[in-house]
Image (tube, rainbow, N blue to C red; front, side, top):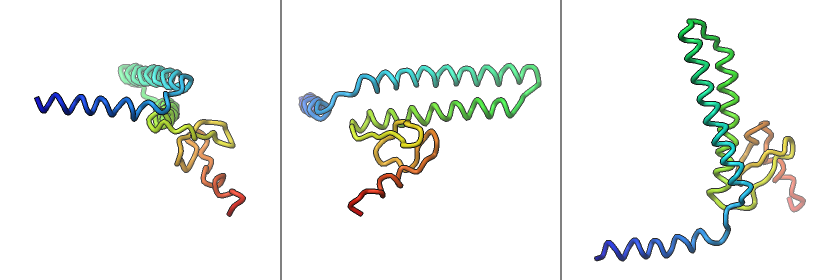
Length: 125
């Protein structure tokens, strides 16, 4: 009986914690597109490597380029998931490339621009 009481109290507290801000639909859609793209790129990379291997003609530069593209999508996906996880609406956009970044990010995931410099230019300092 005690085991039944705890889940119901945990269930009662979780909707209240999640209810202040529902996730942004556009951000959820972006996350879904990134997940699909990431999965397709992973499959493509694996397929390319397999084809190169069975033909005994592996080109490291091609694999490295594809892996770098995959890494960029993964970084963007992590930023979007971090924004969704925190529910923080104060996510910003990089001043150089306009990419979304999560609160507390030091550098832009896409172009590498320092995001700390923009916060230090506050007129109060």
